[in-house]
Picture 1 (cartoon, rainbow, N blue to C red):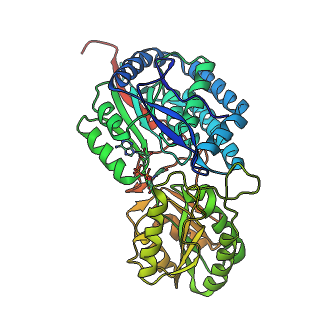
Picture 2 (picture 1 turned 90 degrees about the vertical axis):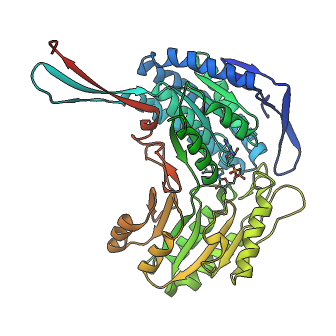
Picture 3 (picture 1 turned 180 degrees about the vertical axis):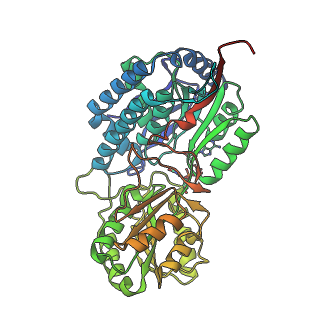
Length: 476
Ligand code: NAD
């Protein structure tokens, strides 16, 4: 059920002298041993990616698109096998892992279509002259994907790179390597030329520190925390290498007085606990109008407390464990800090059980602004419910963090929606839904949440460079 763990370099699977264990976060059992790339492996990956770029950038967009679509079809066919390995290594409930496999395939399918639509343009010019703008693949991409969505996170990066005609060296998350391994296998079976996609694992800082300064690398694409994103951006800037940064969020949810209180509270509690809250768009800071606060809180807390926590392989489980051990103490510290500063813990607040990295679904109420959790993304199953007396106050609170990725609101008032579109500082605003993005919509942040967009017609922009051509009919 769990794949053989290997590096994928120059079209071949390989082991390494050193490896590290991959642990099931629900049972703490070792699932396998992941090879760690040595410098010589990274050198081989760079050489392969350089050669791969020469082939793939000259492959027609239609052929690139066809290869990506063949790989996506294989991922759909292999949905059950992939979903089971994701649940084993990450912990999320199996039905959610199955959806993630399909979402990953959809990212590939969308970008495969976009591969054929990277249009340039013609600019009007004087007679005898032609101005044209061409979009061309940027080069070798060094990409780093995190552990919260083992399949769809690597899918976003690989899809963008391959659809644009770039080659890629991906370092996927060491905690959850199976999703990326299944993707590489699907591309190998779909006939992708060797070297176009390379997959490595190891010490993240050593790999990024070695790859980013290398000449062939023209784009660094990263999803993860703001602190690491800032570090990689600094490193890239020393070499004038472009970056695509999808970083942390701390999503506000503005709940207005005119909304359906029960429906908003229940969808908020369900969505907050999805993926055990380990989602950069997870709804976390709820700013609820005073007049509905008590009803909203009662319904939210009851639904959150009723979340079924357990091993994601078991039927009926709503929420699995945290994906790695280090997150539980980080979450406990945020709860303790909020409590010490005057917040009420309405439910949860602690680890759940003795085995596995489970954390209780947690709701904090009336959390003071100076509590750490009001500034720091919990990246776990913790919601903050605070009361506000006006839309002005809600928007001010929503914007009071350095992040600006996703934001949400529940209201049907056109004047409120109009103001929020103009004033809430996020890259993705959703009204009356807690879904933040689809393959066909652009996704990304403002402020410390990063640069660039994935998905939508904008999704390939970072992977391409623009060349202007001035063609004169005569030598002038
Ligand atoms: P972390 O900051 O140590 O790592 C975050 C991710 O970056 C991991 O996948 C890690 O392997 C990678 N990473 C770390 N250092 C790196 C380096 N020098 N070079 C390349 N990659 C590196 O934090 P963590 O404990 O793994 O996760 C917790 C925090 O990470 C959360 O609070 C959240 O903000 C962030 N995170 C965000 C996303 C997202 O989807 N935006 C996903 C996972 C984690």
